[in-house]
Image 1: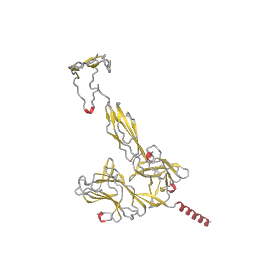
Image 2: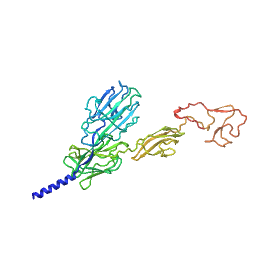
Image 3: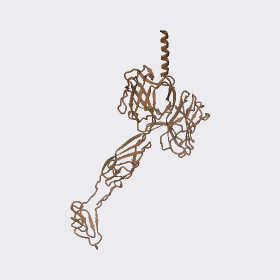
Image 4: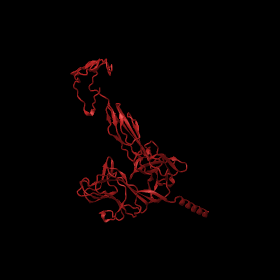
Length: 486
């Protein structure tokens, strides 16, 4: 009997070892979005100038900025990371975003990596290698760096640096550089995945199905295996910022969808959703992945992912990055008067749309597929919406500008229809008459009376010049688009 039990144990161990054959998984090793108002896991070192790297806020966004304008001397400033240990990982990748403005004769920013910097003091005493990255072209345009391969660098104390320089301290001598959403990812051997995504190449704008298997999860306390219900607590990684637009497990998504997973009857649980609709982030955001943990409706039983150190951390489910367009437009005017006029529209959409659909309420024509429609005619008083929908390979987006066009009604400051006689008008030389015409058109344009040189015949070829002169009146300002009609 003892021998039989021993043999069974060996078989079970072999089966479990086979089930838990290790594979490669992607982990976020470092992320910095500067949202706490500091430089976070980075620090600055100034080799020259009093214009150091610093945290900067604009319209609720925080990032690191270097600006040499009005410094005491030309800038030479460093933004340096905390030490990074990449020894336990493979295929490490660095990403970030930059924006810049103003012009120097030099680029002014280089991205460096060092394996021998000591972690403090003058960075010039260390050896730094330059990393190739896509940088902002200017005009404050935030630009993704692209995936920068740093897998050839090994060691337990690596440093990333953003090195800023300027040739002077006035305009045209110093570029302003901004850096945000820095992230380093790497792959490491881990247990089989507790979560899978279908399709595997999905973007944040596709419908996806996440399947959670508690058997392979990292448990903080009691396992979720066999639990009656499983809820998802999740958010998204945008740029280098994790857990953005979080949907609590006891809440619903922006689209009203529940966070409760479906029991598949085989010990796994699934949820199907479109991240863009579920999390409600703005169209065009660079969504890199989903952050998630699972529970049974309380935080007493939680399922997470295994980390390479043998502990638990949040799931990170990478997504293929997509950049659907974000619609916007302007026009050369938004107000017309009752006499009408043409308006020219200019597309301001970002993320390279390839097709445009315009709708012009009250305009002629009422629609267009041109990128920049011109000569859209309006002449009927009222307020009108303009709608633009833009498309590219990654999706679509629509903007509606309500009451964008205003066509002012015609207002009369002064008029004369001659129905009560010549009124305050007067005649110089010759003859003008007011009454019912019995020659020519044989009738007035409106009403009964009109003014004419001769109401019942032809004006003499040899008559003196005659002028019908109005009483005085005040001409409205040019902004009111004054017009004379008769």
